[in-house]
Image (cartoon, rainbow, N blue to C red):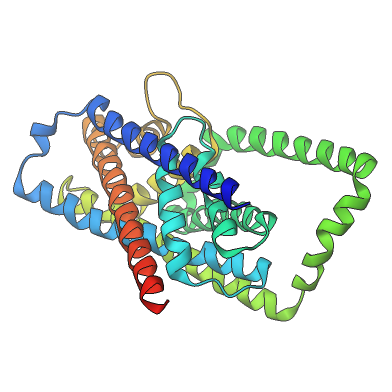
Length: 315
C-alpha cells in the first residue's frame, strides 16, 4: 500500500510539472502584445488583481473542504486540504480538463478517508460553481439576462439534456447490474439528510457566494481603472463576464477563432465598448488568472512544507 501511495505521489508530481510546462506555453503562445501592458497603471492593476485572485484560489479550498467534511464526517485541517486544492487547480492547464478534479483525491490518501467521499464533494463543488455564479449573474444583469439566455440558452439546454440522458442510462444500468453494491455505497450517506447537515450546506453556499463576489471585484477593477467602462454599464459588463465564465466552465473547447468568453462579451457589450477593449480586458483577466494559479500553487507548496516541518519537530 505504501509502495502504491509513493508511486501515486510521483505520478502527481509529474503531472504538476507538466501543468507548469503548459502554463508557460500558454503565456508564450497567447496572442498578446505585452509591450502594450508595460505601463505603471496597467502593471499595478494586474498586480492587485493577481493578489486578489491568489487569495480567491486559496479561499476556494474552504467551501470544497466544508463539503468534504460533511460527507466524510471527518475533521480535516485546512492546512492539509489547501495544498492539495491549489495543486490540483493548476492541473486544469493539462489537456483533458479532468486532472484538476481527479487531483483532489490526493486528500483521500493523505487523510485516510474514502475516495468516494472526496469525489462526491468535488461533484457538489462543481454544481455549486455553476448555480451560485448564475444567480449572481442574474442579479447583476437584471432584465439583460434574457438577451444572453435567448442567445446561449440552447447551449445550456443541450448540455442539460445530455447530462440527464447520461444520468438516466447510468441509473438503469446500476439498477439492473449493481443494485446491491449501490445500496452498500449509499448507506453511509443516509445520515447526511438531517437539519444539521442542511445548515452546513447553507454555510457552504454562503462561502461560494463570497468566492464569486471576490471574482466580481477582480473582474470590475480592470474595467473601471484601465478600460474606462462607464459606471452605469459596469454591472452589465461584469455580469456578462460572469455569465461567459459559466459558459466556458460547462462547455468543452471554444468556437473557432474566438474564445467563448470574448464572444459573449462582444455580443452583450459591443454597443458601449470596442471589440479591441473587450479583447484586451479578456487578455488581462486571463493573465491575472494564470498568475493567480501559480501564486496559489506556491502558497500551497509553502504551507505543505511548513506542515511537514512542524510534524517532524513534533516527533
